[in-house]
Image (cartoon, rainbow, N blue to C red; front, side, top):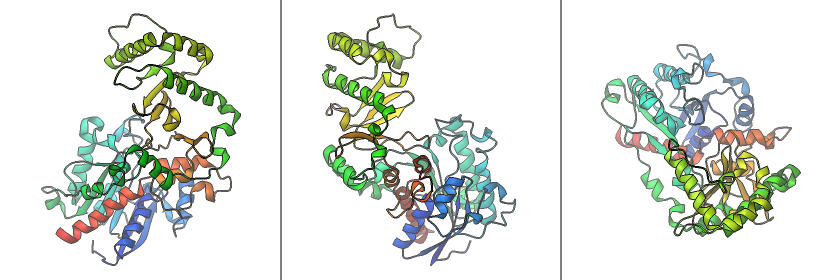
Length: 434
Protein backbone atom coordinates (compact mmCIF):
# COMPACT_ATOMS: atom_id res chain seq x y z
CA UNK A 1 0.00 0.00 0.00
CA UNK A 2 1.47 3.33 -1.03
CA UNK A 3 1.62 5.81 1.84
CA UNK A 4 -0.16 9.12 1.53
CA UNK A 5 1.52 11.54 3.91
CA UNK A 6 -1.18 14.19 3.67
CA UNK A 7 -4.33 12.12 4.05
CA UNK A 8 -5.29 9.01 6.03
CA UNK A 9 -7.78 6.89 4.09
CA UNK A 10 -9.45 4.35 6.37
CA UNK A 11 -12.11 1.69 6.56
CA UNK A 12 -14.32 1.33 9.64
CA UNK A 13 -15.48 -2.27 10.15
CA UNK A 14 -18.15 -3.13 12.73
CA UNK A 15 -18.19 0.63 13.04
CA UNK A 16 -20.86 0.99 15.73
CA UNK A 17 -21.25 4.72 16.32
CA UNK A 18 -17.79 5.71 15.14
CA UNK A 19 -15.39 5.50 18.07
CA UNK A 20 -12.44 4.71 15.79
CA UNK A 21 -13.64 7.37 13.34
CA UNK A 22 -13.72 10.06 16.02
CA UNK A 23 -10.29 9.01 17.24
CA UNK A 24 -8.52 9.11 13.87
CA UNK A 25 -10.06 12.51 13.10
CA UNK A 26 -8.54 13.81 16.33
CA UNK A 27 -5.15 12.26 15.59
CA UNK A 28 -5.09 13.62 12.04
CA UNK A 29 -5.96 17.09 13.28
CA UNK A 30 -3.18 16.96 15.89
CA UNK A 31 -0.67 15.75 13.29
CA UNK A 32 -1.73 18.30 10.67
CA UNK A 33 -3.21 15.66 8.38
CA UNK A 34 -6.65 14.98 6.91
CA UNK A 35 -8.83 11.87 6.82
CA UNK A 36 -11.18 10.18 4.41
CA UNK A 37 -13.45 7.32 5.42
CA UNK A 38 -13.70 5.16 2.29
CA UNK A 39 -15.69 2.18 3.58
CA UNK A 40 -17.98 1.40 6.52
CA UNK A 41 -19.58 -1.86 7.66
CA UNK A 42 -22.32 -2.05 10.28
CA UNK A 43 -25.66 -3.86 10.52
CA UNK A 44 -27.35 -2.27 13.55
CA UNK A 45 -29.89 0.23 12.16
CA UNK A 46 -29.85 2.36 15.31
CA UNK A 47 -26.05 2.59 15.36
CA UNK A 48 -26.12 3.47 11.66
CA UNK A 49 -28.55 6.30 12.40
CA UNK A 50 -26.16 7.74 14.98
CA UNK A 51 -23.13 7.23 12.71
CA UNK A 52 -24.63 8.97 9.70
CA UNK A 53 -25.83 11.89 11.80
CA UNK A 54 -22.26 12.55 12.92
CA UNK A 55 -20.21 11.85 9.81
CA UNK A 56 -20.61 12.76 6.17
CA UNK A 57 -21.59 9.26 5.12
CA UNK A 58 -24.87 8.03 3.69
CA UNK A 59 -26.52 4.97 5.20
CA UNK A 60 -26.68 3.58 1.66
CA UNK A 61 -22.89 3.31 1.73
CA UNK A 62 -22.80 1.33 4.99
CA UNK A 63 -22.97 -2.39 4.30
CA UNK A 64 -22.84 -5.78 6.00
CA UNK A 65 -19.28 -7.10 5.97
CA UNK A 66 -20.76 -10.39 4.73
CA UNK A 67 -21.49 -8.59 1.46
CA UNK A 68 -17.81 -8.05 0.75
CA UNK A 69 -16.84 -10.34 -2.13
CA UNK A 70 -14.03 -12.87 -1.86
CA UNK A 71 -11.54 -10.60 -3.62
CA UNK A 72 -12.68 -7.56 -1.57
CA UNK A 73 -13.16 -5.62 -4.79
CA UNK A 74 -15.84 -3.45 -3.17
CA UNK A 75 -13.40 -2.27 -0.49
CA UNK A 76 -11.35 0.69 -1.75
CA UNK A 77 -7.61 1.01 -1.21
CA UNK A 78 -6.90 2.45 2.25
CA UNK A 79 -4.14 3.23 4.72
CA UNK A 80 -5.76 2.19 8.01
CA UNK A 81 -8.23 -0.57 8.86
CA UNK A 82 -10.19 -0.42 12.13
CA UNK A 83 -12.31 -3.23 13.50
CA UNK A 84 -13.89 -3.69 16.89
CA UNK A 85 -15.15 -7.08 15.83
CA UNK A 86 -18.10 -8.60 17.75
CA UNK A 87 -17.03 -9.70 21.21
CA UNK A 88 -20.05 -11.53 22.66
CA UNK A 89 -18.72 -14.89 21.62
CA UNK A 90 -15.41 -14.26 23.46
CA UNK A 91 -16.61 -12.39 26.56
CA UNK A 92 -17.21 -13.75 30.05
CA UNK A 93 -20.84 -12.67 29.66
CA UNK A 94 -21.27 -14.64 26.45
CA UNK A 95 -21.26 -18.38 25.74
CA UNK A 96 -17.53 -18.30 24.87
CA UNK A 97 -17.94 -20.38 21.70
CA UNK A 98 -15.29 -18.36 19.86
CA UNK A 99 -14.63 -19.61 16.35
CA UNK A 100 -17.22 -22.31 16.94
CA UNK A 101 -19.78 -19.51 16.67
CA UNK A 102 -20.60 -19.73 12.99
CA UNK A 103 -21.85 -16.14 12.76
CA UNK A 104 -19.88 -13.91 15.10
CA UNK A 105 -16.73 -15.94 15.74
CA UNK A 106 -15.75 -16.28 12.10
CA UNK A 107 -16.13 -12.57 11.36
CA UNK A 108 -12.44 -12.20 12.15
CA UNK A 109 -11.73 -14.12 8.95
CA UNK A 110 -13.77 -11.58 6.99
CA UNK A 111 -11.37 -8.98 8.35
CA UNK A 112 -8.40 -11.16 7.45
CA UNK A 113 -9.70 -11.58 3.90
CA UNK A 114 -9.84 -7.81 3.39
CA UNK A 115 -6.35 -7.44 4.87
CA UNK A 116 -4.88 -10.10 2.61
CA UNK A 117 -6.39 -8.51 -0.50
CA UNK A 118 -5.85 -4.82 0.32
CA UNK A 119 -2.87 -4.86 2.73
CA UNK A 120 -3.44 -1.44 4.29
CA UNK A 121 -0.35 -0.02 5.97
CA UNK A 122 -1.90 0.05 9.46
CA UNK A 123 -4.45 -1.98 11.40
CA UNK A 124 -6.05 -1.62 14.80
CA UNK A 125 -8.37 -4.32 16.10
CA UNK A 126 -10.18 -4.35 19.45
CA UNK A 127 -11.98 -6.90 21.58
CA UNK A 128 -12.74 -7.88 25.17
CA UNK A 129 -9.68 -8.84 27.21
CA UNK A 130 -11.00 -12.40 27.65
CA UNK A 131 -10.15 -12.97 23.99
CA UNK A 132 -6.55 -13.50 25.13
CA UNK A 133 -7.46 -16.47 27.35
CA UNK A 134 -10.30 -17.91 25.31
CA UNK A 135 -9.94 -21.65 24.61
CA UNK A 136 -6.70 -21.74 26.63
CA UNK A 137 -5.10 -19.14 24.39
CA UNK A 138 -5.77 -21.00 21.13
CA UNK A 139 -8.09 -18.29 19.75
CA UNK A 140 -5.50 -15.59 20.43
CA UNK A 141 -2.79 -17.65 18.71
CA UNK A 142 -4.97 -18.23 15.64
CA UNK A 143 -5.62 -14.51 15.28
CA UNK A 144 -1.97 -13.55 15.79
CA UNK A 145 -0.64 -16.24 13.46
CA UNK A 146 -3.07 -15.21 10.74
CA UNK A 147 -2.12 -11.54 10.95
CA UNK A 148 1.61 -12.37 10.79
CA UNK A 149 0.99 -14.74 7.91
CA UNK A 150 -0.62 -11.89 5.96
CA UNK A 151 2.36 -9.68 6.77
CA UNK A 152 1.50 -7.55 9.80
CA UNK A 153 4.08 -6.69 12.41
CA UNK A 154 2.20 -6.93 15.72
CA UNK A 155 3.19 -6.87 19.42
CA UNK A 156 4.55 -10.06 20.96
CA UNK A 157 2.30 -9.71 24.01
CA UNK A 158 -1.35 -8.61 24.26
CA UNK A 159 -1.88 -4.86 24.57
CA UNK A 160 -4.52 -4.63 27.32
CA UNK A 161 -5.55 -1.12 28.31
CA UNK A 162 -8.25 0.67 30.32
CA UNK A 163 -9.37 4.33 30.15
CA UNK A 164 -8.67 4.86 33.86
CA UNK A 165 -4.97 4.41 33.10
CA UNK A 166 -5.14 7.54 30.95
CA UNK A 167 -7.20 9.91 33.08
CA UNK A 168 -10.71 8.71 32.20
CA UNK A 169 -12.51 7.46 35.36
CA UNK A 170 -13.85 4.22 33.91
CA UNK A 171 -12.36 0.75 34.42
CA UNK A 172 -12.77 -0.88 31.04
CA UNK A 173 -10.00 -3.28 30.07
CA UNK A 174 -9.88 -4.18 26.40
CA UNK A 175 -7.31 -5.94 24.24
CA UNK A 176 -6.01 -4.05 21.21
CA UNK A 177 -4.11 -5.46 18.25
CA UNK A 178 -2.14 -2.74 16.44
CA UNK A 179 -0.16 -3.63 13.37
CA UNK A 180 1.97 -2.28 10.54
CA UNK A 181 2.30 -4.06 7.20
CA UNK A 182 5.90 -5.18 6.56
CA UNK A 183 5.40 -8.40 4.61
CA UNK A 184 5.16 -12.03 5.79
CA UNK A 185 8.89 -12.72 6.05
CA UNK A 186 9.62 -9.89 8.50
CA UNK A 187 6.27 -10.21 10.32
CA UNK A 188 6.89 -13.85 11.21
CA UNK A 189 10.25 -13.19 12.87
CA UNK A 190 9.96 -9.73 14.44
CA UNK A 191 7.53 -7.89 16.72
CA UNK A 192 6.05 -4.44 16.92
CA UNK A 193 7.29 -2.57 19.98
CA UNK A 194 4.56 -0.21 21.09
CA UNK A 195 4.33 1.39 24.52
CA UNK A 196 2.00 3.93 26.06
CA UNK A 197 3.86 4.20 29.36
CA UNK A 198 4.66 7.87 28.74
CA UNK A 199 0.95 8.49 28.23
CA UNK A 200 0.14 6.67 31.46
CA UNK A 201 2.61 8.85 33.34
CA UNK A 202 0.57 11.87 32.22
CA UNK A 203 -2.55 10.43 33.87
CA UNK A 204 -3.91 13.23 36.11
CA UNK A 205 -5.74 10.72 38.31
CA UNK A 206 -2.47 9.19 39.50
CA UNK A 207 -1.50 12.38 41.35
CA UNK A 208 -4.86 12.99 43.04
CA UNK A 209 -6.27 11.77 46.34
CA UNK A 210 -9.79 10.34 46.50
CA UNK A 211 -11.47 13.67 47.26
CA UNK A 212 -9.66 15.37 44.40
CA UNK A 213 -10.72 12.61 42.00
CA UNK A 214 -14.35 12.96 43.09
CA UNK A 215 -14.19 16.70 42.38
CA UNK A 216 -12.46 16.04 39.05
CA UNK A 217 -15.20 13.62 38.01
CA UNK A 218 -17.96 16.07 38.92
CA UNK A 219 -16.27 18.87 36.99
CA UNK A 220 -15.20 16.99 33.86
CA UNK A 221 -17.64 14.10 33.40
CA UNK A 222 -20.93 14.74 35.20
CA UNK A 223 -23.66 17.18 34.27
CA UNK A 224 -24.62 19.82 36.82
CA UNK A 225 -28.31 20.08 35.93
CA UNK A 226 -29.88 16.72 35.15
CA UNK A 227 -33.41 16.08 33.91
CA UNK A 228 -35.71 14.64 36.56
CA UNK A 229 -36.42 11.55 34.45
CA UNK A 230 -33.00 10.15 35.34
CA UNK A 231 -33.76 10.22 39.06
CA UNK A 232 -35.09 7.04 40.59
CA UNK A 233 -37.66 8.99 42.58
CA UNK A 234 -39.33 10.14 39.35
CA UNK A 235 -40.86 6.67 38.95
CA UNK A 236 -43.01 5.30 41.83
CA UNK A 237 -41.88 1.80 40.86
CA UNK A 238 -38.43 2.65 42.20
CA UNK A 239 -39.58 3.38 45.74
CA UNK A 240 -38.83 -0.21 46.75
CA UNK A 241 -35.25 0.16 45.52
CA UNK A 242 -34.81 3.50 47.28
CA UNK A 243 -36.01 1.89 50.52
CA UNK A 244 -33.48 -0.91 50.02
CA UNK A 245 -30.70 1.65 49.56
CA UNK A 246 -31.74 3.33 52.83
CA UNK A 247 -31.77 -0.04 54.57
CA UNK A 248 -28.29 -1.01 53.40
CA UNK A 249 -26.96 2.41 54.29
CA UNK A 250 -28.27 2.02 57.84
CA UNK A 251 -26.67 -1.42 57.96
CA UNK A 252 -23.34 -0.11 56.69
CA UNK A 253 -23.26 2.76 59.19
CA UNK A 254 -24.26 0.79 62.29
CA UNK A 255 -22.69 -2.66 62.14
CA UNK A 256 -19.31 -3.25 63.76
CA UNK A 257 -16.82 -4.37 61.14
CA UNK A 258 -13.86 -6.71 61.71
CA UNK A 259 -10.90 -4.72 62.99
CA UNK A 260 -8.84 -3.34 60.14
CA UNK A 261 -11.28 -4.61 57.53
CA UNK A 262 -14.19 -3.29 55.56
CA UNK A 263 -17.65 -4.86 55.42
CA UNK A 264 -17.53 -8.35 53.83
CA UNK A 265 -20.01 -9.48 51.21
CA UNK A 266 -23.43 -9.80 52.86
CA UNK A 267 -26.35 -12.03 51.88
CA UNK A 268 -29.20 -10.70 54.02
CA UNK A 269 -31.10 -13.99 53.97
CA UNK A 270 -28.07 -15.78 55.51
CA UNK A 271 -27.56 -13.48 58.49
CA UNK A 272 -29.51 -15.41 61.14
CA UNK A 273 -28.92 -18.95 59.88
CA UNK A 274 -26.72 -21.52 61.60
CA UNK A 275 -26.72 -24.67 59.44
CA UNK A 276 -23.61 -26.76 59.02
CA UNK A 277 -21.52 -25.54 56.08
CA UNK A 278 -21.19 -28.37 53.50
CA UNK A 279 -17.58 -29.51 53.07
CA UNK A 280 -17.87 -29.67 49.29
CA UNK A 281 -18.70 -25.98 48.91
CA UNK A 282 -16.13 -23.76 47.19
CA UNK A 283 -13.68 -22.08 49.56
CA UNK A 284 -14.83 -18.58 48.60
CA UNK A 285 -18.40 -19.47 49.49
CA UNK A 286 -17.40 -20.96 52.84
CA UNK A 287 -15.48 -17.78 53.64
CA UNK A 288 -18.49 -15.63 52.76
CA UNK A 289 -20.67 -17.62 55.17
CA UNK A 290 -18.10 -17.51 57.99
CA UNK A 291 -17.57 -13.75 57.58
CA UNK A 292 -21.32 -13.11 57.61
CA UNK A 293 -21.82 -15.23 60.70
CA UNK A 294 -19.15 -13.24 62.50
CA UNK A 295 -20.88 -10.01 61.51
CA UNK A 296 -24.19 -11.36 62.79
CA UNK A 297 -22.66 -12.63 66.03
CA UNK A 298 -21.14 -9.21 66.80
CA UNK A 299 -24.25 -7.25 65.78
CA UNK A 300 -27.11 -9.62 66.60
CA UNK A 301 -29.46 -7.17 68.33
CA UNK A 302 -29.15 -4.51 65.64
CA UNK A 303 -29.42 -6.96 62.74
CA UNK A 304 -32.47 -8.75 64.15
CA UNK A 305 -34.28 -5.42 64.44
CA UNK A 306 -33.01 -4.34 61.01
CA UNK A 307 -34.36 -7.49 59.34
CA UNK A 308 -37.80 -6.84 60.80
CA UNK A 309 -37.83 -3.06 60.27
CA UNK A 310 -37.17 -3.32 56.54
CA UNK A 311 -39.13 -6.56 55.97
CA UNK A 312 -36.08 -8.10 54.37
CA UNK A 313 -37.87 -11.42 53.96
CA UNK A 314 -39.94 -9.74 51.22
CA UNK A 315 -36.98 -8.49 49.21
CA UNK A 316 -36.16 -9.79 45.76
CA UNK A 317 -33.08 -11.97 45.35
CA UNK A 318 -30.87 -9.27 43.82
CA UNK A 319 -31.34 -6.81 46.68
CA UNK A 320 -30.46 -9.43 49.28
CA UNK A 321 -26.77 -9.38 48.29
CA UNK A 322 -24.67 -6.35 49.20
CA UNK A 323 -21.04 -5.91 48.08
CA UNK A 324 -19.14 -3.00 49.60
CA UNK A 325 -16.11 -2.18 47.44
CA UNK A 326 -15.71 1.48 48.40
CA UNK A 327 -13.08 1.01 51.11
CA UNK A 328 -12.74 1.46 54.86
CA UNK A 329 -12.64 5.25 54.76
CA UNK A 330 -16.16 5.64 53.35
CA UNK A 331 -19.18 4.75 55.45
CA UNK A 332 -22.10 6.07 53.42
CA UNK A 333 -23.42 4.48 50.25
CA UNK A 334 -24.31 7.93 48.94
CA UNK A 335 -20.59 8.45 48.50
CA UNK A 336 -20.24 5.36 46.31
CA UNK A 337 -21.13 4.43 42.74
CA UNK A 338 -23.83 1.76 42.71
CA UNK A 339 -23.84 -0.99 40.14
CA UNK A 340 -27.00 -3.10 40.07
CA UNK A 341 -25.85 -6.51 38.95
CA UNK A 342 -27.96 -9.60 38.39
CA UNK A 343 -26.21 -11.10 41.39
CA UNK A 344 -26.69 -8.17 43.77
CA UNK A 345 -25.95 -4.55 44.72
CA UNK A 346 -22.31 -3.57 44.29
CA UNK A 347 -21.05 -0.28 45.74
CA UNK A 348 -17.87 0.91 44.10
CA UNK A 349 -15.29 3.42 45.27
CA UNK A 350 -16.23 6.80 43.71
CA UNK A 351 -12.90 7.24 41.92
CA UNK A 352 -13.77 5.30 38.75
CA UNK A 353 -16.90 3.93 37.19
CA UNK A 354 -17.44 0.26 36.39
CA UNK A 355 -17.29 -0.85 32.78
CA UNK A 356 -20.15 0.51 30.70
CA UNK A 357 -21.79 -2.49 29.07
CA UNK A 358 -24.21 -3.00 26.23
CA UNK A 359 -26.56 -4.85 28.58
CA UNK A 360 -27.43 -1.41 29.95
CA UNK A 361 -26.44 -1.84 33.59
CA UNK A 362 -26.23 1.92 34.00
CA UNK A 363 -24.32 3.06 37.12
CA UNK A 364 -26.35 4.86 39.79
CA UNK A 365 -24.95 7.84 41.68
CA UNK A 366 -26.21 10.16 44.40
CA UNK A 367 -26.68 13.63 42.97
CA UNK A 368 -25.51 16.15 45.58
CA UNK A 369 -27.17 19.04 43.74
CA UNK A 370 -30.67 17.58 43.85
CA UNK A 371 -30.15 15.22 46.79
CA UNK A 372 -31.33 12.07 45.07
CA UNK A 373 -30.25 8.82 43.45
CA UNK A 374 -30.07 8.84 39.66
CA UNK A 375 -28.67 7.00 36.67
CA UNK A 376 -25.86 8.43 34.63
CA UNK A 377 -27.26 10.30 31.65
CA UNK A 378 -26.45 9.24 28.07
CA UNK A 379 -24.26 12.32 27.71
CA UNK A 380 -22.30 11.33 30.81
CA UNK A 381 -21.68 7.87 29.35
CA UNK A 382 -20.47 9.62 26.19
CA UNK A 383 -18.04 11.60 28.34
CA UNK A 384 -16.75 8.39 29.93
CA UNK A 385 -16.11 7.02 26.45
CA UNK A 386 -14.25 10.23 25.51
CA UNK A 387 -16.63 11.28 22.74
CA UNK A 388 -16.44 15.00 21.88
CA UNK A 389 -18.96 17.40 23.37
CA UNK A 390 -20.44 18.16 19.94
CA UNK A 391 -21.09 14.49 19.18
CA UNK A 392 -24.80 13.92 18.53
CA UNK A 393 -26.06 10.92 20.51
CA UNK A 394 -29.02 8.77 19.59
CA UNK A 395 -31.54 10.18 22.05
CA UNK A 396 -30.80 13.67 20.69
CA UNK A 397 -31.42 12.79 17.04
CA UNK A 398 -34.22 10.20 17.19
CA UNK A 399 -37.86 11.16 17.19
CA UNK A 400 -38.72 8.96 20.16
CA UNK A 401 -35.59 10.17 22.04
CA UNK A 402 -35.10 6.74 23.59
CA UNK A 403 -32.18 6.56 26.00
CA UNK A 404 -31.93 2.78 25.73
CA UNK A 405 -30.12 2.86 22.40
CA UNK A 406 -27.74 5.61 23.51
CA UNK A 407 -26.70 3.57 26.56
CA UNK A 408 -26.32 0.44 24.46
CA UNK A 409 -24.25 2.20 21.82
CA UNK A 410 -21.77 3.70 24.29
CA UNK A 411 -21.58 0.37 26.10
CA UNK A 412 -20.54 -1.24 22.81
CA UNK A 413 -18.11 1.49 21.76
CA UNK A 414 -14.36 1.79 22.03
CA UNK A 415 -12.98 4.58 24.18
CA UNK A 416 -11.99 7.38 21.82
CA UNK A 417 -9.06 8.64 23.88
CA UNK A 418 -7.42 5.23 24.32
CA UNK A 419 -7.83 4.42 20.62
CA UNK A 420 -6.41 7.77 19.51
CA UNK A 421 -3.28 7.19 21.58
CA UNK A 422 -2.65 3.85 19.88
CA UNK A 423 -3.35 5.27 16.41
CA UNK A 424 -0.95 8.15 16.99
CA UNK A 425 1.73 5.84 18.32
CA UNK A 426 1.47 3.63 15.24
CA UNK A 427 1.92 6.60 12.92
CA UNK A 428 4.89 7.89 14.90
CA UNK A 429 6.61 4.50 15.07
CA UNK A 430 6.26 4.07 11.33
CA UNK A 431 7.90 7.43 10.63
CA UNK A 432 10.79 6.75 13.03
CA UNK A 433 11.79 3.16 12.41
CA UNK A 434 10.18 1.48 9.45
